[in-house]
Image 1 (spheres, rainbow, N blue to C red):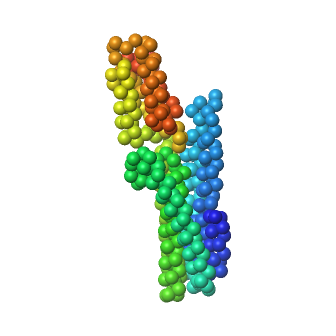
Image 2 (spheres, one colour; image 1 turned 120 degrees about the vertical axis):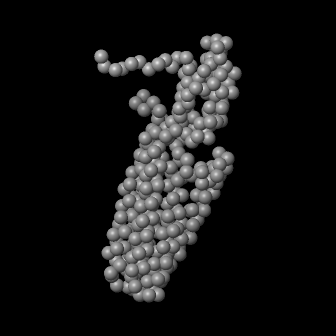
Image 3 (cartoon, helix red, strand yellow; image 1 turned 60 degrees about the vertical axis):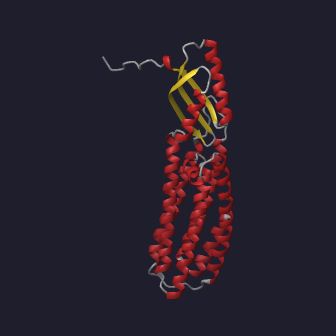
Length: 297
């Protein structure tokens, strides 16, 4: 659908001579390439773990999403800005009707897509009992975040293009149309920065949000033979994969058999409550000796 919209916008931009319409065509083309790359990311990240990659391929989703932000949004944004600046001194439009029709149809289609994204966002945030805005900020599902920002940027871009066309038609001054093209480019760059920052943060290695770390710690400390959790480390391995490692202070009265049973039960409870937790490593606090002195002698 995005590819068809991009083609229609490009035809309308060529027919009318509108820089904003050509920029919107670049915008939709960027969305199309982004979605193809996100599809590749989802396919690759779903590969099962193997000997070479014992923790799976979840991080590849963030790599492909970061590449999508860098190569499509930035490219589309820079193209829109330079094309808008260049067209500010060009002549007026030859035909506005085609552009208005394409913009109206595109707005309806993008609005339907954005509505479905909002429904999914609300459902997932309700599942985690957090506000949709907070969920969107912290979710490791960068695909959902990318689609939300794409759809929102698409709707805003369509409004900017329509305003640019309208003022150019009224005044006969192409500066308004060129300005709309520049603003669409700036909008794409903002989306690129937001998506790039989110994916690079996850690619480098990001822990769970504070609330979930507190809940994981509390869940571990409810175990019968665990006195306290001295240190807790969490790592987002992929959109649906989390690693939990903890140094645990077991009760002095706990036997070796009791410690083994407690670790198995704690791991089972964590996985049942949070299905994305796939790896749990618990180490006795007393076993965490002082790191060796590696100073050369």
